[in-house]
Length: 295
Image (cartoon, rainbow, N blue to C red; front, top):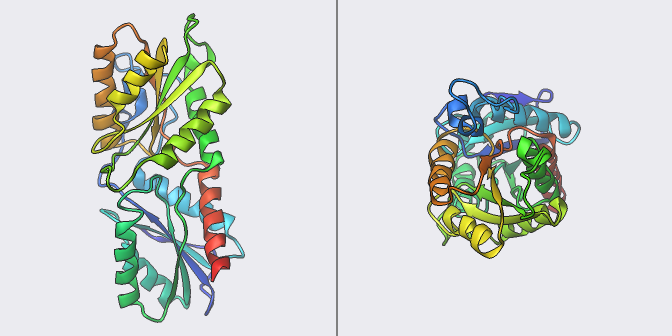
């Protein structure tokens, strides 16, 4: 993926690698939340027309470059998998332009294997290939109140939020992230994020968190908690994912189909994914500046 430049690299200045996961899948409406609400060939009016992963990450990189104007000479989007340039190549591009200090900024929504174990391996590989470049690792996005606010906005996109069912029971929210094996992510940060969403939505809502696959808590256990323990009358699934694609289509929407069959009397809907949003970019921008100031 091409570099997004603020200006020509200046010797000794800062460069930023916005490090993403990447996806080999493009995206269509069939891989997004609106497909679950589609009536035949007609998609719901609330469909946000989410970009696919390559386009969405490029847009995020462009916005980050604008946000960091004056604090970084160049921003390059790099992916751990599938989409080039991969991290060592991205840092080499910055080094060749004259940048000698680079912040690696993980643009990752979780704290799993990619954000922890693999990050050490990535830094070792980069250091071996570009030994003259000073590297600093920024914190990932993590639990941030601005992201909780974005989740609420995505939930509010749905007609069910604007005009909730005529039911005295609360509406349940399943906040579901991409799956990570439990040994790599205890999801405590996700539970904290879910508690902020529940607090701000108010007493008519109950939030439970889940993973799309691999580890606990599962979407099935989240639904059971909402229905059996918290007595909800309907459920909205809020995908904690950037873009449409295989995980949303196969794991999240696929499980929602099973949950609807298991609870036929509980109306269910699925909110759009997070997409490209200035709040996400601002969190990443803050993490970069924190890393710049730390050394």
